[in-house]
Length: 294
Image 1 (tube, rainbow, N blue to C red):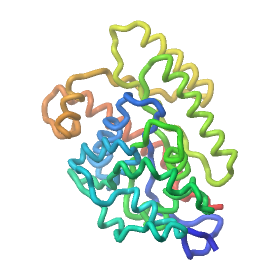
Image 2 (cartoon, rainbow, N blue to C red):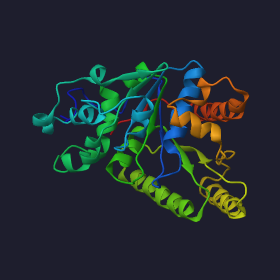
Image 3 (cartoon, rainbow, N blue to C red):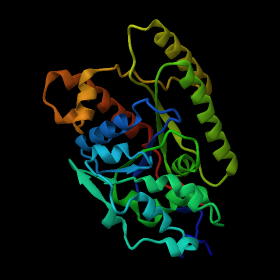
């Protein structure tokens, strides 16, 4: 009997048609949260039901939803999945944690999430599958079309949980040498998870050059090198057109709005770009659905 659920395990279980998409990069300052927030809004604008999960203890996505210091957060929902930690269970369910803004739902983060790895260090259940089990037990893929995860700038247990739970990954990066090195480390983590054999690894749907400055030739050179690396690893082009360091996006984020909240023509290009990211997610995860359980 498993330690997470009384349900019998089978080779595959119907988890619904929803797709879990993570925005990940071990390097901070790449605009990951802003891209996740606006892409979620683009999916919502296309008529999809969207849930955002803030898996970053810095809680920047939670801040964009106008949520401040929630009493209960995603941390408590995850701990509640682990029977061995019953003494730490919080008297709350998903409905008690859920927040909503502009038609999108959010499970907020809190600083508590930074202690997840230490909290679960002694359990015998698979620590890397806690998020996946939460999504399964709450039947989230039946309730939402897309679950957008904003991950932390690390490669620790939180990120491993995200990678074991998601169908696809979007990788924002700054076009520089450090990002190129960081992508190599990220690919190594994917290979390690595949070697674990506990779940299928997600597909990297797109790499997103962000905050690019056209005035710096070095950034263009670094971007071309990264494109070559990605093409070599994946066997095809998986780098989208750059997001430039535009005032409109900075303004929207500062006002806790998405680019779709503005009618001004200066936001049309950004709206188009985020719409294209939403299309990539929809098109490249169209054949994914059921997740293997071992």
